[in-house]
Length: 447
Image 1 (cartoon, helix red, strand yellow):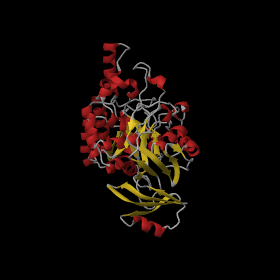
Image 2: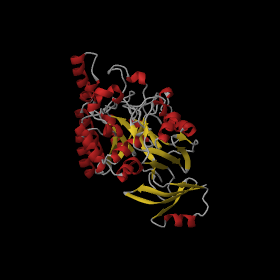
Image 3: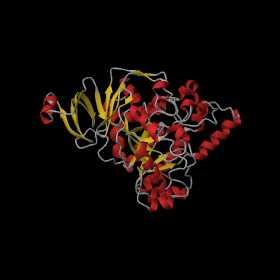
Image 4: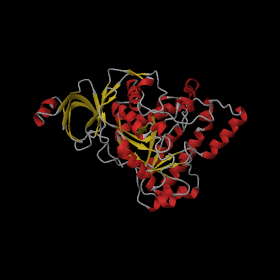
């Protein structure tokens, strides 16, 4: 089946240009640019099966989210692969990479294969899964060729019980693992000390405003320094997730000179919120690493704008509203954001903080490059037709009814975006249009 998208503004590899794009089955068959684009497209494919008028719209590659926390297996009622991938699809995300901290955690090849099998049956978008590191599985993981999209190492504890703090295990992973290592960097000893001090001051009634003090910048910096030192020593392919401080930006910028295989990711909530939002939002924006100061937020924005950090993720982590309304010590960390990460970035573009090419670099090109994804993340002939059509002139308000998450809430409820996601294509198939699922597409693994 051939679909021709005409008169559209395309964003790809640092440029914005007007033209037409022809889809043939799974792939982008042809790009046409310039004043004669439509005439050339008609000559090349005089009778496409479907013609879409892209006048006034923006066409980008599908978003590749390198960090989501779906809750399958173990807690599908909080976020199954099927339901959360539907939400991602509505937001223009066409591929996801899911973390291993489930129940049971994906710490063996057998458990990882079960997740891939489940996604093949139920996912609405292309899928990849990380293998999880533990203090006890270094020998097994490093003895075999890499599987999944990478190895996730929790160098700081978060949801689940997967903290890797054994120095010998860490050194083994960094020395012997042949794929990409993705890290959650927070130094656990510093966090425990800060938490004890907060309990001495507040007892069990710690205010959420203390979250960035407990899970402090010092904890992030110390852990990131450790990961960089190991990666530099062993030449490891290292991807540091959800960077949250200005100091870590500087560390990564300097480290990448010595080892170009060291890259970083920033999450949309660290670009959107600051610690001044805790008073209003409370536990709804409690996440690990913590959202920090406006100065940190500005440094992260500048790092994205200058290309120092080349990947933008959502760290989508659904918890129930009831759980998030518990007191600080009991409330879990994590925000559901995968349905709106693209729109958040587009709004920051409208505010003049980023260019469209830089947003596409962070959400699409960067993840494809870092993880070596074959024929995804770009508007190129012969690449999979994972595409998003954006309407920049018509906004939409986030309501509870519009949310596709299983958890049924968002920290963005009531916010009006200046843009909408018009259409989403998965492997050449129109999968979503005007905030509705058009059909269940045929997604593929991305790793």
